[in-house]
Image (tube, rainbow, N blue to C red; front, side):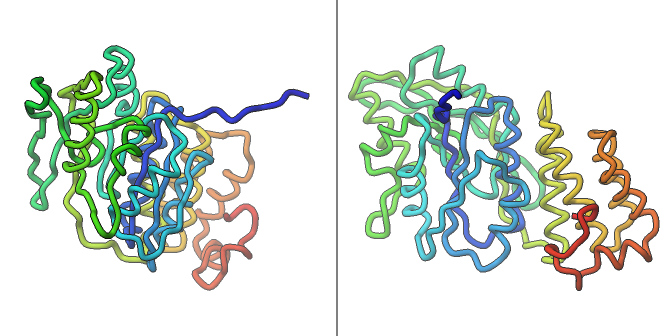
Length: 309
C-alpha cells in the first residue's frame, strides 16, 4: 500500500463573488480549462442569495473549493482567500473576467525564466458597447528601477508569502484596491532585491458587468460557458466536456429546447460512444412528449431517472 501525499498546487486562483450566478461559471470553467493543470480555485462567496454556488458546482471539479464568507466585503474576501490558499503563487480574479487557456502556463514560464517575485501580463478591456481596448503593462519607476507592470485583476501574480507579508487586500477597516496591493508588492519585491517581470501578451479579458440572465436559463448558460472555455484549450478534458454536455442537455430539455438538448447529448455520445446512457438520453430527447415528463420542471433533480441526470 503506497502513501499518497497531495500535490501542492503551484497557483491558487482566488475569486471573490456575491450574486453573480450569470458569470461565475464562466470564470471558474476558464481557470479549469488552463493548459497548466497544477492549480486550485478558491471561490470566496460573500453571502450570495442567487444560485451562485449552484453555478460553481455545475462546472467545478476537485480543484475547486468554495469558502463561505457571508457579509465579507470584497477586500476581506480576497484576503481570506489568500490566507486559505495552498499554492505558492496567488492571483485574484473577478467573476466577470475571462482568461486565455495559456494564462497560467505563460505566467509560470515567465517566473521560471526570470526568478521573479511579481509578474504581470496585458489584457483586453471589453466595454458595454462591445468595443475593446488593449491594456499593456505600463512603465513604473520605484526604488531607482523602472519596470513594467499591470495591476488589474487577473493580470498580476505574486508569491503567497509576499501577499501575507503586506496584509494582502486588507479588511473592512482598511480595504485595498488591486492597484494598491500591486504597488505594495512592487515596493516589497524591489527593496528585497527580487526581480519583477512582465509579458505584453493579452492573457486576461475584463468584461463590464451585464444584466443578469433569465434565472430559468442559467443552468444551460453555465454548461455552455464550461463547454466554451474547454473548447479554447488545445487538449480539452474529455470528462469535463462530457459532464458539461450532459448537464447542458438536461437544462435545455427543461427549457423545451429540444434541438439544443439533442445537440448536447449527441456531443456526449461522440465523446463516450460506449456509454449507453448517452444514447438513451439522446433518444429520449427525440421524443419530446415523453422527455418532458422525465425532465419536467416539477420533477426534482434528486428523483430524475439515472439516464436523465
